[in-house]
Image 1 (cartoon, rainbow, N blue to C red):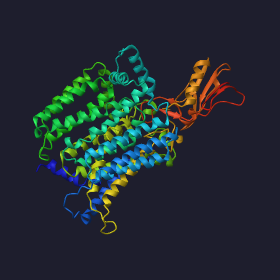
Image 2 (image 1 turned 135 degrees about the horizontal axis):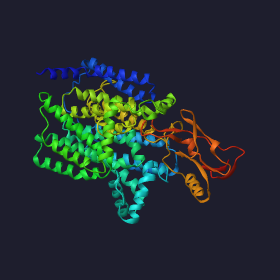
Image 3 (image 1 turned 90 degrees about the vertical axis):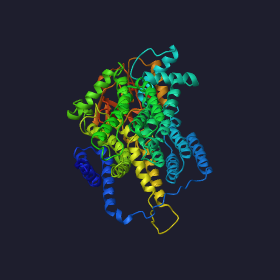
Image 4 (image 1 turned 120 degrees about the horizontal axis):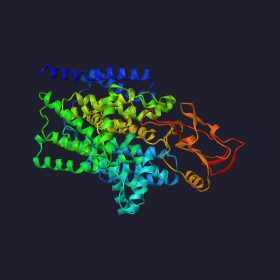
Length: 629
């Protein structure tokens, strides 16, 4: 046996200890830098590593004596149908009486239904039973925020950028511009014309439906990665749907929702081409044609989604090269030659597009440069940012879901790494690549390397698989906590973890800041409208002359920052004839005072009304106030 193979196997066996040391060192670095907003997830990584180290020591005393296959324990088909119908009715009913504030009952319904689905998966339920339930769970959860904010909950660029462009497409009949987002605007315009929806509704429905549809693609991962069982694929789809990042994307419909399923399809296509020596040629042709067919949808749909898919393909191709040249003795499967041409075709399609050449090349070069030379662009370069200034209880509530995700992901990853299977190592290679970029983004440069984007892609393909593997291993253990009983404790533990992850994810401000339990403590951009805001804007457009607006998320009046999360309007430049229009949401959601792309780059502060008793108030509707200074 070659020495590097022996060394690798030693690393596999010692991986719990190595992960624990690495996690402890990383935790020390983040604490020393005052990066408290990330300490929770890193602590979760360390705890997961410690758990696996302890398990490696005590494992001989807990060997599974039952070597027989796990029996399927599917519920009668009527039970999931009835529970799903009850969930739909309860969700619609509870939101008939609530506006602008998430009802506590939603946490109960969401966590309970997610746990019910997890229990079925742990019991070996079929794909045809589980997938419809996950789809219902996801779509209603994503759309629930639209019930809370009938005027629309949105991403800022969607509301102020893309919807007006779609209105222009419907008005003139064609897209009169070229840009990074051309494809998905045309698709939405066609959808609006076919359905009769107005542009905003069409965008929200299509974006939410496509994000929900990603679950269908994730549910067939076991057909691409043969080491994954059906239960792992179903768990991966469920975990993706209940993660705080996915919920946040679903509750704020945006351009990225259109391309998540396509990115996963690219990955599945590449994996099939990688193992082309073991599958029929007819299947290889079908996947190759499917991969080629969806290239235009991504390349012309959204610039940086095309870049994300390219990054995934590069990672799979890089792993294939390493496995073929270095680990040929470790695996009985090495890369075939069809993967290279497919990656080359997609690379030429992306780089050959003149719309993407400059921006993507610039982003790629800055990404590479940032690994060596940190950015100097103000608060966006690596550092704690304003979130690390929040109270400890707010940080705990905000990052609890991410802490659980990192702990479970490292448990699953260590177990996968010790199995010596190419499917597991491929997923781990991708995790390590993006994890390294995530660390670089946080510690050195969060302007050119966007940490939240890396985290989002990891939840799409990576973390969810590792957690699913951990759940699958746990459900197969026979635990006898209170003697020999008929209770399957392993499945109950998995179900409890699913419920805990679902509830903490929904409560996290990463999912939805405006309705999170800690929303009033976190300054951030407003992503919804209310009747008072709309009426105030209409009054201002009709009557205001020579006005200065302090309406979240922007302000025409200079804002002086008096604390990490507080600011006051500077009235020195306001003349006697200037009408000041102030929205109460500037105090509840925050006003931006500096620009940037990522963590620490944008700064928002709570701004109270600058009105004084001596001012002349001319308008007030409960949400918007207008006065002369």
